Image (cartoon, rainbow, N blue to C red):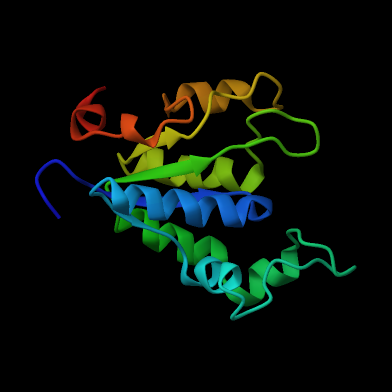
Length: 155
């Protein structure tokens, strides 16, 4: 890793898993140490069937998250990173969606002084809009090229 790169852990709704892996790959192409939970990579490569709800539909459910201990694993990975990237796309008609898990992950990053990047803008509709804004995420406006070491040093 060169002096102008950083270790960025990619997160987002499991509905965006393909986009998350693509963002991780693009970060690596840009010279960063982009990384993501191995289960996400394996799911996209077809090695495992992950993120399926009780009706066989891709989604997120408590039992799956509990069995795979994702909350603790993501916390550990956040601590090992310089920053996180939240892939916030449209979901269920909500533009720039940030769900409950991502809010928690943003909080984990925030209290550990990690920079928080949002792929897109802050959602205009969210029950926890003030909490998202209070963590001062850096909006990339869809451009991963905007992740720079100088961005990480901004307060």
